Length: 148
Image 1: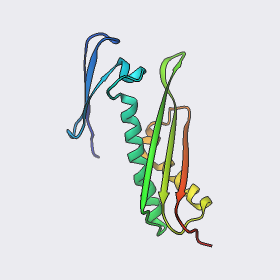
Image 2: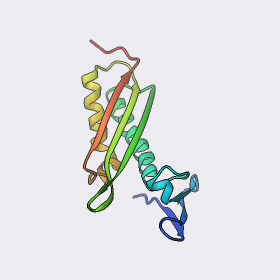
Image 3: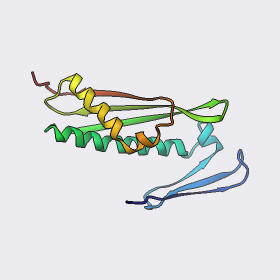
């Protein structure tokens, strides 16, 4: 199987220090810090990268599942929001909201919802994040004519 890699470097204390996150492919490198992670400071953070990974991952099995049924999507736009909250165990990902809007012809809302839920269940990142207490999906069928 394929192996993917990323790295992190950190200098300084937790609150005053800073670091850099790098993807092994070299396509992304960004600064992170306590303010970028736990406040609204500039830079990225691990949770934002998880959100990007989840959005990209979910969109691919959804494309595959729709295509298997002969419904090739014209456009899929997925946004993921990773909620970081305080728990007795410390900072924790408490919820993930997965929102997708899909432009595809020939599907009724209920059929589309079933296919979107199937994509969520088969998404590698969704499965990897199964320890998150709640992963919500909102799937919207956009600008299509449903088959009767």
